Image: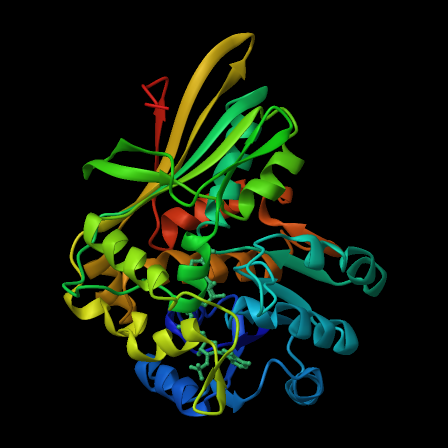
Length: 397
Ligand code: NDP
């Protein structure tokens, strides 16, 4: 039924490719293209299906992308490269009549923004071309938005308070490592915090607000308020929301390393001159940190990500907590990657499946919560990310 092109060959792309290859009823032709073709070939070798094609492409270059798209003629591109490539890939999709899906908002290389404005500006062009673009279809953003849409559809007349809670209680036995691309991860965590309250954005210092929250099957973990991109689309798409926040857990050891990295200037994303060569300190740091794709083998414990929601139903106050727990070891056994790549790659595959089944297909540029959440929620249960609900419990928030 579906001819799909995956761009990128990192941890998330590996998981998505493994899952796409398993769902043969939906995905009939698959290609993986990335900057380094050898990495695409390695994924195909892992999957063990020589029918999957691979190609080399520099996704910063629209012309190269157009040649690839015109040659392979995919119906959908699943962009699992880096946020820097979102716009070039969207441009090439428009030029070649290809639909689009990604897991992270576009980011300019020189400044951290974490906002959708650039991609939302493509809405009319995708509409006019009759093409679908699905934005932010990982776990958060992604499932966090689908959980919220599901809650709004089935359990609330009005959502008033939304807290997205993201806990990684895993241990990879390294002194310091990031769970996905280090450059994007450190950019995200070192920016100022921000949350939505009564129609306005309240800014905080980075990781200034924190409190212990209790996660199912894990227990209490110190959780830090930070800005996350789905807050922008969710507060727009669910205007009854009065307050929306995002929390993520970090261990003391991680935060100490992060503080040192910042204090010595290694988190900088501007260019510095080094022996006559221009380097970006954070990109250099990425080159010496552990590769997130290599963490899986010794990773123990699990992640727990969910939405804690307060609002009204039939005139009564209600609380609702919907979450998924994912074991790093189970993820590794199935895909060779750890839980953070797994919880991102599986939703990307399900989003692509929704597209090919015709369930999430409408011309324009959309965030995931603007589609019907039900078939996606159903697939989460079948594809390795089962979810659970708690009604009217104590949300701690
Ligand atoms: P990795 O760094 O492991 O992989 C990125 C891949 O993209 C690499 O294979 C890299 O190639 C390739 N790439 C980078 N630049 C280019 C380019 N110019 N042209 C072609 N290919 C390129 O990242 P992850 O797999 O950890 O993350 C992938 C995406 O998922 C990121 O955008 C990240 O922000 C997002 N993400 C989203 C989450 C969510 O829940 N929504 C959670 C975690 C991640 P090479 O190997 O040659 O460097």
